[in-house]
Image (cartoon, rainbow, N blue to C red; front, side, top):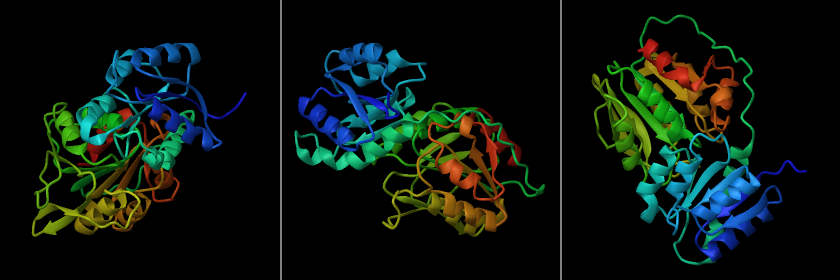
Length: 337
């Protein structure tokens, strides 16, 4: 018996299966229990071996990755990580995320090349993150800060692994009339955010768009940061505007810290920061800026997170953040605007 996650590698390229399996095994922390050459093979292996995680190619013969995800719909395991070629699989990748894939990892090349090893660190980290059991519900209190009379002027959301599904639930649950704009940073490969914004836009009477430089942030507008560009908030007289910035100073671009920091500077105590499921601690520095400005913070409770990393850092930082299960966050936001 082992506590190491058990992984199935599914790809129609024999070379890719070999390289990805070697990378995962070399970590010393992961067991690759089998490989699959297409979607039908993957479903057979899943039924026989019950792996914790599947790394899934999307474009395959017989049955593609979307077909696999549809067949797995509603199952708590395995967690699925899409390993795709961004330029080819962008639309399929967004559909895969909507169907329950935990995250997307972009192949550096479509060629049978050892460059595939370049995704090793990211792949290993995400396999380990999504394979950890969801924390048992610990009854985290919803901590109510002192009553503030000023409603939120700007809602800012940050998320990473598991974020597309969390955003889907959050945005679909928001009221048809929202008296403040919402901005969102999601860690996702370049090329995905336009299609994801269009998909989210269909779920709500609110308007969901990919960020554009100079876009005015108005009530009822949800702005998704463009992958590969930081989303900054700028005060322009009475208006708020989105600004796109290419500042390669953070691990993640876009950065939740950058959104929260600039939003807090623009609206002060009118800032509402929301941190959903995700790996790492992006958002912690920005959350401190929101707290210092007199704003408010909501974190997704451990019990509903795919990965309790980003929310945990903020919740445990002593900033007065409220821990709220995902299915209640839309209501909590509505009460503050």
